[in-house]
Length: 147
Image 1 (tube, rainbow, N blue to C red):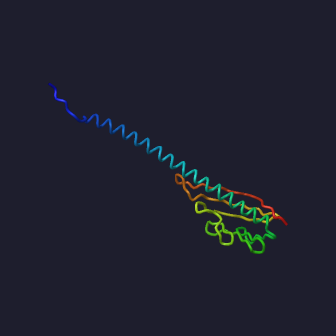
Image 2: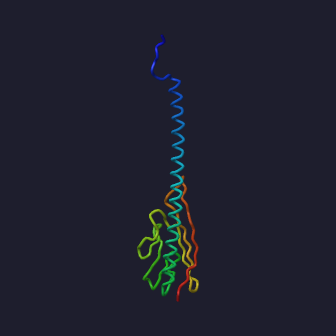
Image 3: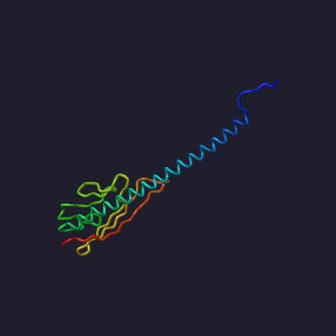
């Protein structure tokens, strides 16, 4: 009679470990790809949302202003200083209130008054880095004064 042995051979264990390693590597790759896609999506979303919110705020306040003065290329004063837009350390401020979110910074802004319009150009940079690269978005708009 042949004696039956319980257990696994070394070859069976090596095959099992190889298959398990491949499976774990595939799952890790899927996880990393999903995480990168999520970061790219968050970065793009933050840029688009802040770009639209800043432009809408500027458009509303410029349109409803009685007067507009461009004190410097980076500072816009509306209604004799009642509302002042200025760039400070990467943040666009309206009377000391930050307009951009914590996920973006304003790299540059330029105001130019031409007749009854204000030309605005600004560049936003995402602080959410995807694969070591920060995304940028540039906005150029001409806003009309009501008066």
